[in-house]
Image (cartoon, rainbow, N blue to C red):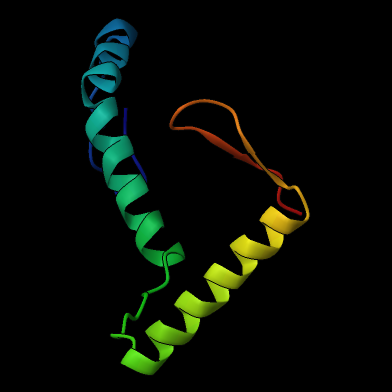
Length: 87
């Protein structure tokens, strides 16, 4: 058989072709997923929170917890388990 550029194309048995595909499938999928995930994944930037920000967030969380207790959204379900019905 002659290809586009006049080179002879290699003939292979379909069984050998399928075996080759199965043998290289895992690596091929890994390479494809690696490339695709690099395109889709955005770079996350992390910064250290200031002490004021940490303190403010702690106060907000504590107030939210106390409000949930007052509204009956927190129930003790076991010795070390709680149920929190959040909105």
